[in-house]
Each structure stands twice: as C-alpha cells, then as structure tokens.
Amino acid sequence: MALVIRWGRGRQNFHPLSRALLLKLTVIIISVLLFCEYIIYYIVIFRCRWPEVKTLAHGDRQEPVLKAMFLADTHLLGEIRGHWLDKLRREWQMERAFQTALWLLQPEVVFILGDIFDEGKWSTTQAWADDVQRFQKMFRHDSHVQLKVIIGNHDIGFHYQMSKYRIKRFEKVFGSERLFSWKGVNFVMVNSVAMEGDGCSVCSEAEAELREISRKLNCSREQVQGSSQCEGEQQLPFSAPVLLQHYPLYRASDANCSGDDAAPPEEKNVPFKEKYDVLSREASQKLLWWLQPRLVLSGHTHSACQVLHPGGTPEVSIPSFSWRNRNNPSFIMGSLTSRDFALSKCYLPLEDRVLTMYSAAGGFLAILILLHFERLPSSFLFGWKLCRTHTRR
Image (tube, rainbow, N blue to C red; front, side, top):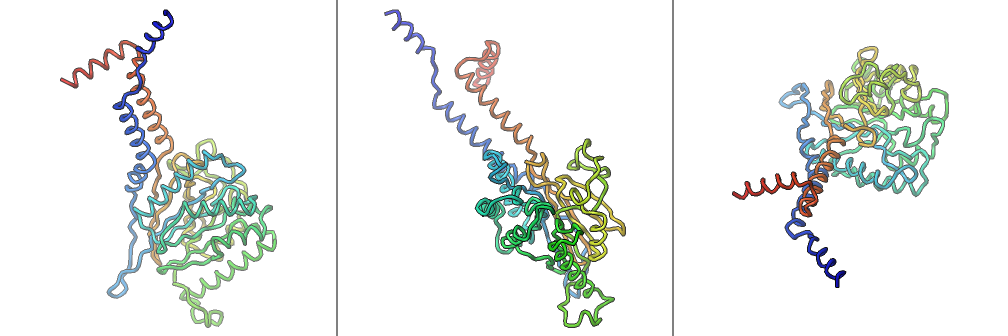
C-alpha cells in the first residue's frame, strides 16, 4: 500500500508538456529555421547593388553594360574527406546564397574561378559523377544566365598530379572555352595549373592556345587591323580583355592586402611559394605581355586582396564562397563595358552570427521548458510569475 501511495504522489508532481507549450515550441523552431536558412540570405544580399560604370553613347543608343558575378573556391566535399553533416551545412549555405543572388541581382553571366570540387584531383569516376550532379543542383540557373567555370588545382590536381584524363573529364562537363566575348567585353579563361613553364605536353598546349588568343586580340586592336596576319579573321570586339584564372599572378605575400576578408594577420607576411600559392614571375609576365589585360580576377588563397601589377594592371583576388573556408564569404559584382568596368563586393551571412542565433533560440527554448516544469531557481520563477501577472493586468 505504501508503494502505491508514493507512486501516486510522484505522478502528481509530473507536468507533461501542454498543447499550448508544444505549439509555442513548434512555432519558435520553425520560425528560427526559416529565418536562418532562408530569410537571412534575402536580407543580407538585398543590400548589394550593381556598381555604376561610365557608358558612351553610340548614336542614339547607350553602350551596353554587362552584369557579371564572380565567385571562387566552392570546394564541394567528396566521399573521402567530406563528413555528411559538413556537406549538408556548407553546401546548403552555398546553394541558398547562389540561388538568392540570382533571384535578387539578375546577373547575365556567372564565373566560378576554380576549385569547384575539393577532391577532383583524386576522385573516382563514380565519385566525380556524384559531385557533378550535386554541383548542377546547387548552381542551377535559367537558360538566359550563362555559367562559366575555370579549372582549379583541386579539380584536376597540382601540376605533378595533373593529367589529360582529368582535364578532359572536367572539360566534358564545363567546356573547354578559353575566350568568351559578350556585349563587347572579352574574357580570357586560363588553366593556370598548366602555366608551369616546364614544357610538359599539357603546358605546351595551354601556352599555344594563349598565344593564339593573343594573336586574335591583337587583330582586334586598331593598330594592326588590316595586316596580313589578320586577313579573313573574325574580328573580336575592340576591347582589352579581362583575365580570369584560379592562381593569382605573382606577388610576394598578402602583406599589403587589407579589408575584413583579407588574410588573417598571422598569415599576411608568410611568403608565397611560386607555382603553388601564386604563379611564377615568368608565367605572370607572359600572361601580362601576351594578353595585356585591363583587369585580372583570381581565387585560390580563400582571402581577398587587391594588387596593382607593373604597367598599372589591377588584380582582385576573390575570397572563398564557402563557410568551410571562411566565416565571411563573398562574391564580386562587376558592371563591364568594352572600355570600362566597376566592381563591388557582396557579402554573405556570417556563419558565427547564424550559429549565435541558433544558440540563443536553443537557450530560450530550454528556459521555456524549465519554466513549465518549475525547475528554475525560485527567485527566477518568482520574477517570471510576477511579470506574467503584471502583463495580464
């Protein structure tokens, strides 16, 4: 009999979750998820604006302006190093950011400057197919938006890992185009992994392609038009090109780079290794001499930097687009004409801010549950009840 009495008293002290509390918890959880996984991307990216660029009038028409997005180092995880939770979290972040940017900003062309995948350099045929399928889902786009992808070292391996098989596998999916022109703007897309300069077959073919592109660009310039080497040549727009590649051109380090998304202070003064962190001096000079670009855009370092090369050519290194590589990812928005350009940076939501929101929401839910079971200190409960009484009045 005594046992029955004690059990009955124990049941009287147990407070199951009421329907009202369950409803509150459900509403809070759904609201936090919607905000942190959808709405925050619209709030943050909505603040980004296309930069203004000077345009010239051609008769009664204004010079066309091309709106281009540039991002880098997405590093989709593979089957070897990619934990499923890491894949889910970071790839969802990139998918939501990209799809939101397409919807809000309406770019005409998007360039991804290499290291699309994290394990392309050693992935099997099946793993490669799976990674490509995930990429195509994440970076899906309407037919009126063009997506151009540049080779990075994680896609085909560093020079000593690079092979024609991996390059062909990449080009089968993303194309082998090296020269792209639209609205009077020329873009040259370089396989910078092949700029080793050691005479390997892949390197020799890449340099031969670039010399041919250089010839075509020279034919588009006024001073050589009409020469014998350009007869019968389809003329490119008369415009200095924009050079796009994964590796940055040679610079000693990131010591002179600044901004919220530059390399951290402990890394800025670390010397860069040629042909690994940046292109060699020789390769950089070749590209500047052959192509005479008006702008260079690169990735690879995962941090932002702006450099002015000899001759006044500016280079912008674009930070990684993924939370896996930095807390504050971003991309570049470019307004380009045949003669001018303007760039602006668009930041994505901060990862630590999103995690803070989840932590705060979790703490609030815990307090609600503890209040329901009256498990909080008596002074806190007294204040809570007093507050509720005052609110009801």
